[in-house]
Amino acid sequence: QLQLVESGGGLVQPGGSLRLSCPASGFTLDNYNIGWFRQAPGKEREGVSCISRGGGSTKYVDSVKGRFTISRDNAKTTVYLQMNRLKHEDTAVYYCAADRQWYGGLCYFNGMDYWGKGTLVTVSS
Image 1: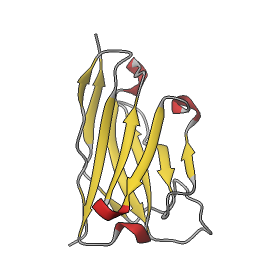
Image 2: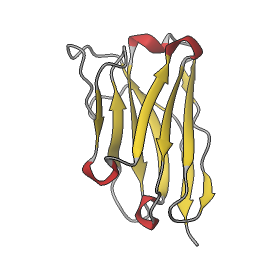
Image 3: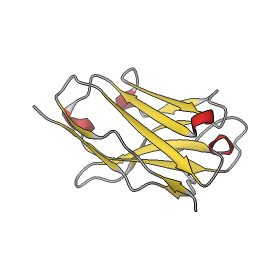
Image 4: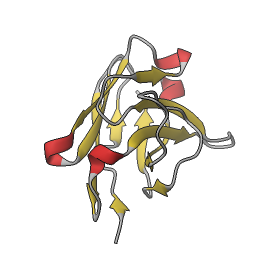
């Protein structure tokens, strides 16, 4: 059974850091692009970051550029999202997702095939 299970969410003060993890089970992670998404209360889900199969290409939404870093460890079948200098507006449920399509070494936020159930990140003082 293919599964993605996010972890690492929690309550953090503005300016703080969290690292989210997305370990995969039931499939080989290195055959998939992986994306991180988030959904804040009352808002639509948005793509935050994605990383290509081999890790050579990444993408970030403008609001997190310079603060968030996506990485992957294919040997550990885990993708990470390091979030620094967190802001109130980063509060959301964060999801990881896997996309098996080949885009020539790139990644995109659309077309995800598998989703985790999410982990809540709350940025509050």
